[in-house]
Image (cartoon, rainbow, N blue to C red; front, side):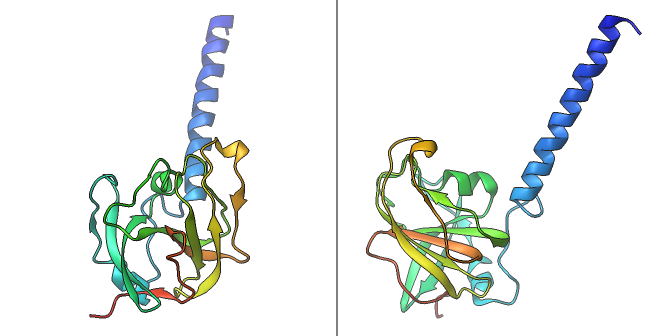
Length: 178
């Protein structure tokens, strides 16, 4: 085989390997490659089943209503990898929303960062049934991710709810009462 043929074969192998690695990475981040779903049969699954398109500045996201303590919150849903990565970065005002609900397809221990986030946020982490796992307040960090602290729950969780600081709650999340 000529040097040119060998170089071409090597490039093809590297490209195929890179594509396969990217596919496997996406699969590891999002259990089925599609939007993460709430656990069937839970109150939170009922709430998310009625999600609709979100309004600006959250184009491309969906929204729904979820109960937290005795309140019914209008939240933006981040149930895809790119939505969870974007989160509330660059948002200075939640507009008509009370927060953002991060939905994971399986129990997670992923950390959160406030890189490029402009407002203080409460974050609550919840198990598959919507019961609280942990919560904390996160401070804005206009710098890049390397220079910002990471926030982690004390245990594995399925959902994370970010609300403006001071407006979070200690109870479970679920469907709003009819």
